[in-house]
Length: 96
Image 1 (cartoon, rainbow, N blue to C red):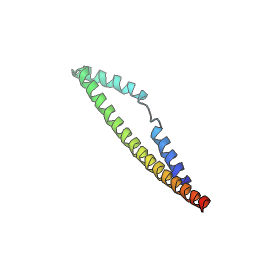
Image 2 (cartoon, rainbow, N blue to C red; image 1 turned 180 degrees about the vertical axis):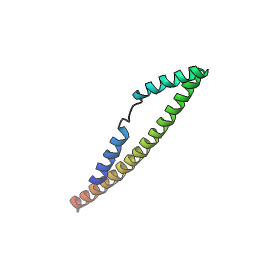
Image 3 (cartoon, one colour; image 1 turned 135 degrees about the vertical axis):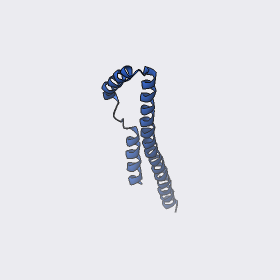
Image 4 (cartoon, one colour; image 1 turned 60 degrees about the vertical axis):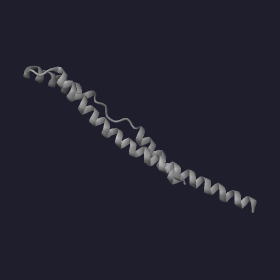
């Protein structure tokens, strides 16, 4: 039971862990804007490309967090059943 609880908290904390931010992307964005302006492309094209990349990265991060949350939920459920079973056995020992 304790093992399930420890694993469940570990998976819950992994799901809450903050990933690396994209603060370092500003240099690349400025460089890409300059290239697109020289090539005659619009800023809208760059914005669309940048947001598409960000959405793809966020989708992958959310998928990884969903897996950890599912593991955590399952382990909490298992530990709750174990707790119920131990309490039932303890109650039977007291009554008998």
